[in-house]
Each structure stands twice: as structure tokens, then as C-alpha cells.
Image 1 (cartoon, helix red, strand yellow):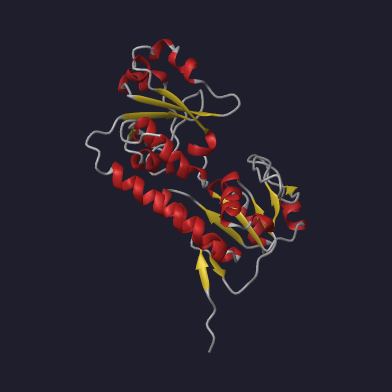
Image 2 (spheres, rainbow, N blue to C red):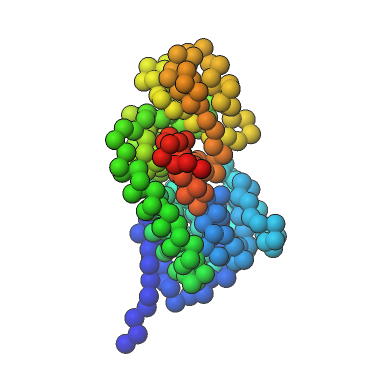
Length: 275
């Protein structure tokens, strides 16, 4: 008797490994990034409007953005697999699964989980052999980084600003894990929700030693942050430790977070991570 092979996504949904999936739709930039990194970019037939793919990639259809995903467009593409993120679980996934479409959900709560999930996604997409070198190298780099930061005696308090309104990553998020692995203590970890908004007075009260701003069109700059009246006495501002990192490195749970955690570690511990 032949037993079917299967794996599961981050929601526990089961996926057969005995099917070939040549038509894939991605609903989020993080998912698109993982698919391209794993070697499944040539199987993409649809992506969200915030995703980017290599210029050499064949043209794909745009299926909407974060606010509105066009289910009819997705159905018309006749995908073998749709890859979604946490924000799609309640609003988009039910409509697709009701149509008989397989949806693989990536939740991305820690860097280790991201790589485990990516390996399962590679199996579902049928690109495990292509993905193996990338996954092995990513895990090696992560192990090396953690082995160095575990030995750090003192961890600086870090505030990472996702938006000028004060959005940041709270407890149980991939950002909290990223800061910890980089050798810091996440100020957002004091929040009671996953993605809290910290008022300027709260940031000033806790006096972080390092401030990192996630940069994108419309974000604040280190210069603007340093000029905020309430923050002029904050240690990070007084000591010139206000830095910026591109949003792809710290705001999206995609493959860019591996480089992001390395860059963050070098900013938090410049003498330990030279260059």
C-alpha cells in the first residue's frame, strides 16, 4: 500500500507532496520574497501590488494589495497554490479554499520558524532541491550570529519605529525575535499587543539606547527623529545612535530579515560585528 506524502503550513493545513504545482499566486511581499529565494519565482503567475520580482522574471498578473485582494482575478489564474500571510487568514483564505484552491499560510513569528516554514513551502512547491543551498546557508548564518550574541553580557534597549505614529513590534512578533537574536532588548516587548503604538512620551520615559527607523516612502528619517523635542534628551539621540534600515530588512517577515538581523547586530554591537 502506497502512502501519500504531505506536510502542513503554519495553520496546520495539510498539503500533498505528490502533486506538481506550476502555477503559484503570492498574496504578500514576504511570501513573494520567499518563493523567489527558494527558486520558485518562475512558477509565479500572480503577485500583490506591493511585491517585487527580478527584472528577468516573466511578467505576472497583479491581484490587488493589502486592502483589497481580487479573488476573481486569482480564480481566473487557475493557480495550483496560493501563498498567504497572517492578514489574509480571516478575510481572504476562506473564499479561496471554498473555491477548492490550496492556500499555504506563512505566519513568520520567529526567524527559526520562518526557515522551517520556507522549507515546507519548498516541498509543497516542488523546489526542495533548488532551495536546499539557500536554506542551509541561511541557517548557518543564523547559528553563527546567535552563537555570538548569546555571549553578550549587556543588551541595549532598542526602539524600532515602523511608522511616524509610533508603530513597532510587540511581544511574540518576528521583530521581537529579531532584536533578541541581534543582541538587544526590544522596547516594543513591553506592549500588550503584537503591534503596539508607543507615544513619544513613552519612548522618552524608557530612554532607549538605540533607535532604528524602518525607512520607506513617507517614513521618518534619523534627522527628523533626532529633532523631536521630546526625544532630545533620549540616550540614543544624545549619543548619535539613531539609525535607519530599509523596511525589507526589519518590517517584512521575508528572507530579507536574515540580512536585517545581521545589520541590526552590527548597529547594536559595532565593536563585535566589524563590517
